[in-house]
Length: 462
Image (cartoon, rainbow, N blue to C red; front, side):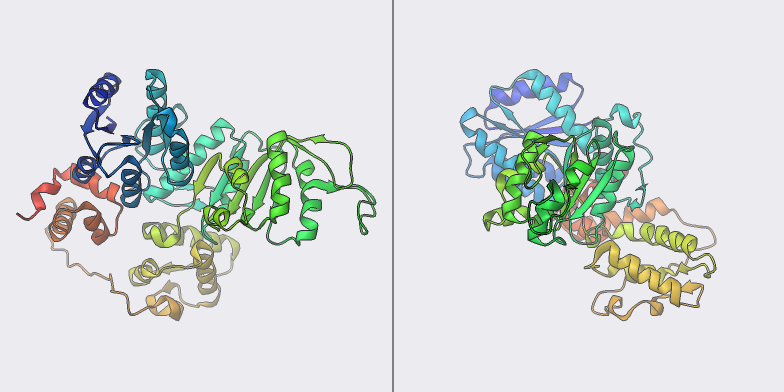
């Protein structure tokens, strides 16, 4: 049953909202201020937080949102706001990770709708397209692989975009995280799968040519325009145009792109006719566009137009639990590519070293290293010493562990419970620190605590 925390310094408002949502079948708790809310969040797992924008305490809804996003980035937060504060609330959604806002006075049907939507995004509520089955997580979509919480959420969001036919998506993430793979998956599984998929790297085209590439030109429009040329928007008509590295698009071209997104029409350079286009635009960037806006090199209105549906791809260093799955996927991929090569497998020592490494080049770097090992190594079994020297950073603590299992066997669940209990004791009951000690997400820790009946307060020192 999904659990919701409501935060407001108005007791009457808390009572009304609690009754409404409890009748919908949710478990609802309340807090009268942000400090109490954080205490609740530390003690147990919630699937959604609904917070007032302004409260009488100095620690306001904005600060609560920031603290929640620092500790649990995937926990959705709905902001309640008066009309006079609407611009601030929209800013929290656009810039600081709030899920959405509820304008006061709260309309019951709007409340129910947005709560349901937020819980579906969290994965706490089944959707029709998932057939109500959350027991078996999706481990891959095409060549996108992962079993971590953040990748599971990414897979769910991709599925929702595919089913709903969204026409504008912004994919963010570091270089090498697989942004282009996500764009191709959205095309392959979406309603435009039988239409063109056209891609352009906005940073690889000279500024003088980028407008011609995007919008086309007429014969004689400039010196080298010896014949008419269709732009990529025309080529991608009824399909998808993938604008990779959108952060590198020249500022003078950004205004023309904004016009195309708003009016759904283009005009070739040197032309006089507007041409209607039906194009789904997927943009991607490894840059911080909010910072680019502050620096005056990216238009804020274009950002808001592109950022209809944001997808963030986490770097590999933030999801080391995905590395074994990725390694096995890539080894199988190389086995298919190099049929005559000897099959390979990695020892636990080698896998441990891969998990400890920070991977500045992300999945692309991991794939290149494994390909090199697969092609050049004559060994069937790849050990730690076979890995590139830069991966073997001896300054990092080793996680190699050997266990002597007795003849009578062991209870794996009891061992896990002991490790969880030890981590909570060492962290004085602080879940964030305990999760870090165990190398898992806070959400996974909370699931383990619920399974074994463990409470944070039982491990706090007096």
